[in-house]
Amino acid sequence: MYLNPERITKISVTLALYLMMAGVAWSQNRQPNVVLILADDLGWNDTTLNGSTKLYETPNIARLASRGMYFTRAHSASPLCSPTRASILTGLSPAKTGITSPNCHLPQVVLTPKLAERAAPNSPTVMPAPVTRLATTYQTLPKSLKAAGYATGHFGKWHLGHPPYSALEHGFDVDIPHWPGPGPAGSFVAPWKFPDFDPDTPDQHIEDRMAKEAVAFMEAHRNEPFYLNYWMFSVHAPFNAKSDLIDKYRQKINGTMDKNDPQRCPTYAAMIESMDDAVGTLLDTLDRLGLADNTIIVFTSDNGGNMYSPVDNTTPTSNAPLRGGKATMYEGGTRVPLVVSWPGHVKPNTRSDALVNSCDFYPTLLEMLAIKPESGQRFDGQSFTPALNGQPLERESILTYFPHAPPVPQWLPPSVSLHRGDYKLIRLFHAGPGGAHRWKLFNLRDDIGEQVDLADKHPEMVQEMDAAIEAYLKESAAVVPIANPAFDPSKYDPAQEGQPGPGHFGSKVPKSKPANRPGNRPPKKTPAQ
Image (cartoon, rainbow, N blue to C red; front, top):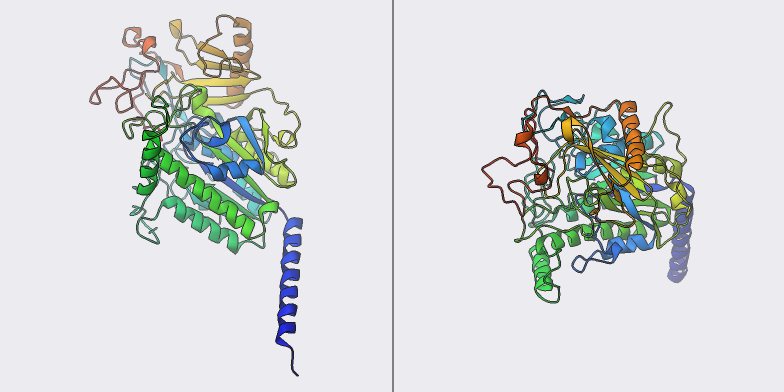
């Protein structure tokens, strides 16, 4: 029997189109995919979404925002990374997990928080010695999605513990590069120092490689629901990038930019472009695979931008108009970019001023996916699906617990904060006269830079908001700082609060001398990661 080749071609094309359309229809009837992209140390003003940066270029993050909703008042659960990461996976505050500092790469295994044995005489408080591993007993987000039939993959930074506390023990089928450290091993640009993970090509950028691995995961699981957890190494230290991009931004800075613009680090700008390129690679893949319309994408950061490390004779970034940044309890430390996209469900190119927190992602995703929590499972966060639907989000407050005092610019004594409406209260543990607490109160609507302390003007508001803080800390059984019985007031000057310690940009303290700040001994101090 003879068949006309032209007819065979038409039949093949028709069949291929039918199968493709059937596949798209099937994918839209199955559970949505989830892609959670977490940047590392990306500040609130480190993208073009606020319209203020003159240096950074983030067209792919802007493309994602055009497909979904941008939240202008999103916060991380901590101004440092590991506590926020634990909050995303558990829906619980650092006050409950006990992971309150980024020390999960250290060799010591600590699963229960406790107070340090003692503190130096220049410290008003004895601070907690934090947990160093995310215990595998938690019902984490990947465990819940895996039980619901999802393929689960983690790519990039983990920083919640060495095996047996790695991503593989927390519900992920895949963990690449299976690295417990606080940043990329040695460098962003190859050669790297990962023990079992080599570059494909010389000078390969780690985000190019991570995006490639993430693409392979999506291609392998295109016919089933998947949860892709892409926790970027960018834009954390070490500060290095593709040389051509550094040259590009150096020329931009030396050309048309205002000489007084505080964002003027070419290396950091180059790092942001590589990060944004990786986001674009994921978006392009979802489009190519026909999965974009059935995929929930969350993009956010684990804390505010680094404004203290010396790079290119400046700091990596500036969080202005916010005060402070990474490792501080001011808005610059916890207010972060957040974009959520889900075509057909979240109205494209919209903004929300709803107050949300990284503890909210777990309950929000469960509600979006119509997956019930485990029996008895409770969250500190709440679902913000009403905001995603364009409705008001009814919530009383969000709490941020950070009982440490790294010596970065704008540091504060160990503290906890409460956002309620337009107001933010910061309680400074035992930093007042006679070992009493001290407070700072700000109206963020009128004073986003937190320059005008209203605590003395509104004592009743301070008392009411502080009572809410106290109730939560007691309910959560948090290990909180106590007044230091060995404290010597003559060795502590409150006027020095916020002054950077040695090794930080702008410090006037010689590196060989200790910072003029409260410190605990033991445990040994861990640098902000």
